[in-house]
Image 1 (cartoon, rainbow, N blue to C red):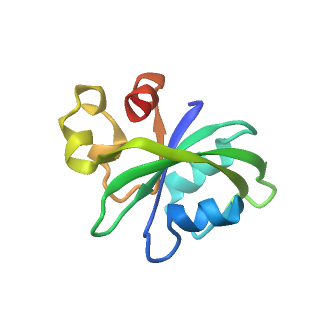
Image 2 (cartoon, one colour):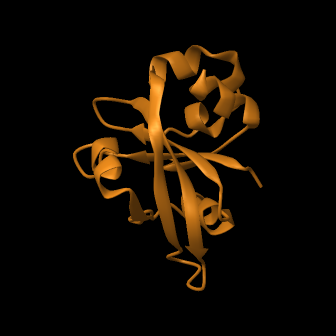
Amino acid sequence: MSDYFLFKTEPTVYSFDDFLRDKETVWDGVTNPTAVKHLRELKKGTKWIFYHTGDERTAVGTGSVVSVDASDPKVPIVKVKVGQKLKSPKSLDAIKAASVFHDSPLVKIGRLSVVPLTEAQWDWFLG
């Protein structure tokens, strides 16, 4: 189980600016079985990267998990709080070019909306 993840969302649906405004939210709308499995595995304090999909395809910020209610295994309720904007947003092209992501589901399974990250990948996003 990873201590770091990446969550994807359409910025037209919920953007990082929305998250900054709200400070906390429930992360929902995830239906892919693998992504739901990852949500159920999250624990309080898990750190994650906020990634805009669609035309933008860029990692833009951070967040952390406040709580997870996995009593309904099909729809875990994950409360998250905002972190900060990345000093340097990372495009999908930059992610694909970085050797640290060579075997990552982030580049191998493009439709996966909740992706585990290694510590080295987390550090790359923050660098």
